[in-house]
Image: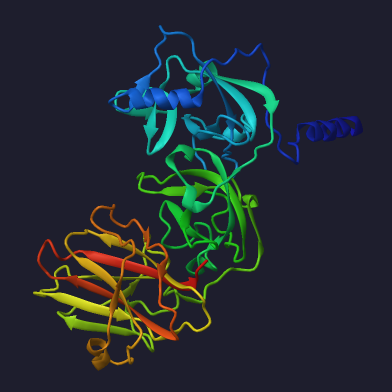
Length: 440
């Protein structure tokens, strides 16, 4: 009986999983020599009128080399692997769609793989160059059999070096590659939120990253199925690396990470001279001491709201079903003392819903006396920033850019909405992140 117990203990120890997971090693054969590139795939796709191509079995056998840059171990990627052409200074990236989960057990980060393209399809799937099973109208996932027939693993694993990329330098050519953002932080409205565990996060959580250098922003997108969805965001500033890609609807650039370990925020926040993110305001009509929400014509006013597309809590205004022949409403800041700034600049963000012929104009005044009667008495000068319009997709937030303000002791900023209940003048504007900062 004692011998039997010793045998069972030894057997259990041998069968126990390792404490630290290791990628299953590949079975190395003589790997074929690659004779094409990811760039060549992208160029061939661009030749196609449909945007999708099939690599025929009758053409020259094509082998492409790529390095793995994504992992589904953290649950933030699903049935896909992102790949790029080099481990450092990558020129182009893509993804391969696979009908398989737990891909991290076979494809490690930095691993070199070789893909046989013949019999596969390629095209832009939701804004990202993708390869997989060819369909007339798109790209589908490879089956288990197709995976083993087309992907060859190697024993080459190299360190991945993300490319340092300012947010204002992001271009379509770098989609699908590993990048690093320096000197960034999560927007003030994101503080104390989780990656994607809020009540309003339906499929993915989107949290706004802001550059400390120029206030440009990029959303970090996290799946609701990720293992770190309920981790609270870091409140400091620093660097973050991740894969630059597109959102589900191909409306905007987003960043996706394999795990929170890719965030290295160690320096104090770079919060601004003046910032109004509306996070602490009561939902409904916006009412705050020193601010004016003045209805010049009609009945509509600025409201605080929050949903899946707002930047936390944001403001919105629209004349839909208002019954107004004309709707004009002024949102005016308090007089802000700029004496501590040498080159004061204004920035804000806007989006639209069902945009039509509505207008949103931005003005400043240096002689607004701070009363309803003083609105018409003051001299208002227009500021020409980028404002969301019907030319952009609904609910896509647009950065205004940096708008120079006068070097005066005080200034008030006004956002003026104009519309009506007419069907082509009743759209909605959203507004958030009104900021004043020191120019460079």
